[in-house]
Length: 445
Ligand SMILES: Cc1ncc(COP(=O)(O)O)c(C=O)c1O
Image (cartoon, rainbow, N blue to C red; front, side):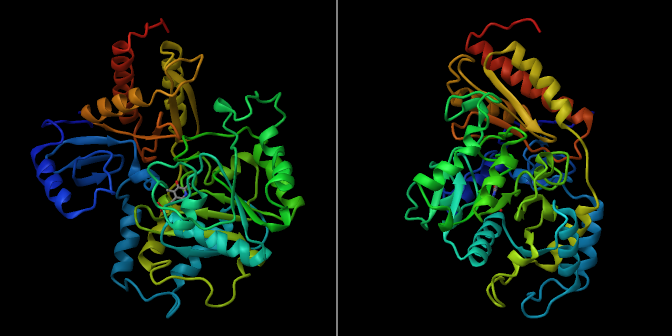
C-alpha cells in the first residue's frame, strides 16, 4: 500500500478547528508551511489529526536525518527518563555530557585536540561560536556571507542575509558584522564562470581586508559549507580551502555552521569533509538530537578554552535526555538518497526549462526554479504553486533561497526507495501541472 493516503480534503476538519484556536492563541509571527496538525510520525512519514498520511520531505527542517522515532533513540531516551531529566550541568555534571563531547571531538574533521560545548539551538550555538572566537582572538569583527542563514537571535540575525521575513522590522542588530558574496556559481555576484573565475569570490577576501575591514579587527569568517535556507548552494571543491588559507594567513578563524548540512545529511557526517577542510570551530544542531533540542560547538582545544570559567553555559544547555538521544543518533547513520533524486531531477531539467538548476550533496538536494533558463529570473510564484500542489497531493515540501524559488529535500534519511519514488512522482506531477499551465512545451526526454 502506498504511504501517501489523503482521506479528507486538506486541511481536514480537525486541523481546521485547531487552526482557529491557534489563530486566537498564538502570534501570527509563527507561520506554518503545512497547516495540518500532526497526530503521529514514524520514519519518513507523518499522519495528521484527520488521518491523512504524508511523506515528510522536511524532517522538522532537517532535524530528523535518522527518521522520526527510531527505536535506538527512543530506547536511549527511555533509559535516561528513568534516571533523571535535568540537573543543569553547571550545578551537577553528568557522564552523558562528557561522553558526547568525547564522541564529537572524535567525529568532527581535524586530528588536533578538540573540546565541545553543548547548548540548545542552532542560533545559541552560533552565538557561542562568536563569543569564543572573540575571546580567543581579542578581535571584534565577524565576516558572514550573502544568502547565509544563522538563526533568529539578534547576533545571528546580524549574520543572516535574507531580509524578509527574518530581519525586516527587528533592527538594530549587533555591529562588527561584514558581508561578502558566497560561491553561488549559478548566480555569480561577479558574473564569472567557474573554473575560469579562478575563485575570484574566495580570493576577494584579501580585498575585503584592505577596503572594508582590517584583518586585525576580524575574529572569524563564518560560513555554511552548503547553504541551507539560502537554497542548498554547493560551492566548488576548492572554494573553502582557498578561503580558509587566506583566513589563517591573517590570524582569522574559520567557523563552519553545519547546523543544516551536518549530521549525515550530505553522505558524510559533516559537509566539511567533502571539501577536505578542518574548521577551527564547527557548529552542529538540528539532527544531532534525533528530534530533541541540542546543539554543539566543537573546536580546537586552545580556542575553546579562551573564555574563562563561568563565561559559557545555559540552564538547559546539554540536557541529559538530549545527550542520551544524540549518543544513539551517532550510531545510526547513513542512507543515500541523493542519487535517486538527482537522476529524476536531471530528467526534469531536460524536460522543463523552469528547472534551472539541480544541485546538492548526498541527501541535501534541491532544484532552483526560473522563469527562463536564459535570464534565470526566479520563478517564486511557480515555486509556491508547486509546493501547494505537493501539499494537496500528500508531499510536505519547503522552499529556500533568497528569491524563494528553491525546493529542497530534507526527507529523513530512513525514507525507503519506494517512498522516495512515490514522493518524486508527486513532485514531477506538480512540475508538469505548473509548466503546462504556464504553456511551457514538454520536450521529449
Ligand atoms: C545553517 C543554520 N544555522 C543556524 C540555524 C538556526 O538554528 P535554530 O533554528 O536551531 O536556532 C539554522 C536553522 O535553520 C540553520 O539552517
